[in-house]
Image (cartoon, rainbow, N blue to C red):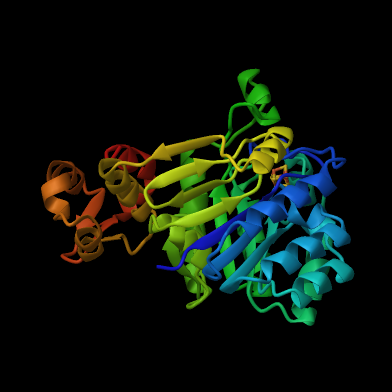
Length: 365
Ligand code: SF4
């Protein structure tokens, strides 16, 4: 089966207050980092991939020179989907043309919200106006597959703010919309504020109202809810992320990236200096064998993220075991609690299960 490739670019203009992804704001290592990245890319022999995804960090903060170097090297692959994450505050016509001319066919804009006061609260570097300008530019240039990342549960965000965000974004008709609730991760500035009791986060009821409003509203607007947090027009589901949710194999290059190949998980160092040294020596920070039990467990809790659920047939084909023989007791308990259903072909979350998805996933670990 064809694999996908993730490319990590660990630079950001400024660290958002909620972010725990590996990224730094000092760009001085950019040239030697890209040199190492190209070496790692050259080691991948497979040419036919399902997708390429350049994420970060903020890939679009790379200089045009480095961005072109990276894209040209990636052009050796043939992939149906080629996504890059774009921060609305870091693109312009020149950059968008470089992306288009070098095969990128899907843009993922990290917008989060349309209210500038909330963008500021999150520590984002862009305004809604900037996003609008760049979204329109991207359309003019010919990008016809665009995702917009949105966030709810932002401190200070009301249900009305969230409704307005969804309304204004769906008016633009992006092909794909992701809606994530804010998670307060340890090690972030928001975490420190939260610990000091200085973060006004929404309560559980507001959180659920926002989520369910998004599900109903986006459905009304023609978007298919195909994963817990993801919505798309038919045929525009993200091939790359579906690979993770299907627990299929992937390459990951760059600092902090992971690969999953032939039952092994390979991890790169989450530190640019160490990463570059490791690439020179052609070694990984870590290589771990994933047992069949672990693979089955991941297959279940990742697969249940899909609204369609986990295919019982695919489980049997892949593991040569009947899903009921392996997870019968767990499933019986979850079905009794009305958190999952078994429709004969698929095991999937119920609406009630969607609200406590993490509780369900833990049952498979
Ligand atoms: S732009 Fe993205 S990766 Fe960079 S700090 Fe903000 S959320 Fe994190």
